[in-house]
Image (cartoon, rainbow, N blue to C red; front, side, top):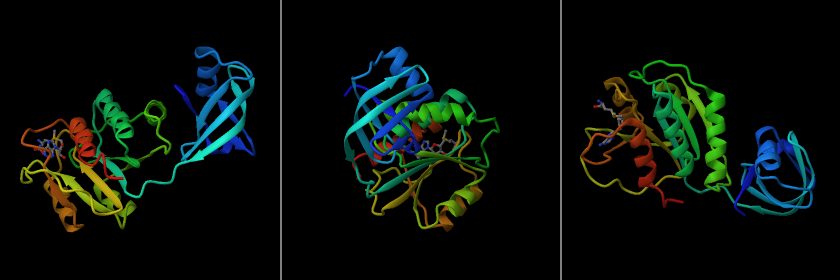
Length: 231
Ligand code: SAM
């Protein structure tokens, strides 16, 4: 099972599924699947399908579902929240690594110190899908774009927050104790005093990511790495 394809849940009907667009082109033109070949696909909602290709073209691949394996939702949800990073490649790196490291959702917000730049949401979505497939995850993280940290707290009411703060006491973070968690990292310019106060007001736990000051994208992946084995 070297390759797992992604299929939207609406493209699964009864015992059949369809790959479209880039997924179909990848299966037919790059990997040269043929009718009768075994193909694995995931719907990003926990299901992995073992299928047999029934028809194939560069625009569409139809397959019959032979077996379905459903992975339950993780008990502990880690939402990776970070202030928008201006440099496109660094933002893409942060998003890709967040998928690989098990973020349940990814939330990019306009922080007080974020430098405004246009985010190409379609491009980020294809990076998310490609990292999802590469890392053989079953649950596809949704990416949300919010306009402030205030909106983050409104959107994720009932979540426990952990904020990476450069001035927090340098010590190893404690394991996550809650089921729904927001992991907050600031943009290149850091969190504003207002955002730090807001987070404290919302009960955020301030943590250190070590004595060195990390770039925002390094901080995001380091944050998730701290909780890698929290299921
Ligand atoms: N000049 C900024 C400041 O002093 O806050 C630096 C911001 S840093 C490049 C970007 C973000 O990464 C920070 O807002 C923080 O969330 C996180 N970060 C970087 N290094 C960290 C560390 N050693 N401990 C905790 N958080 C860190």
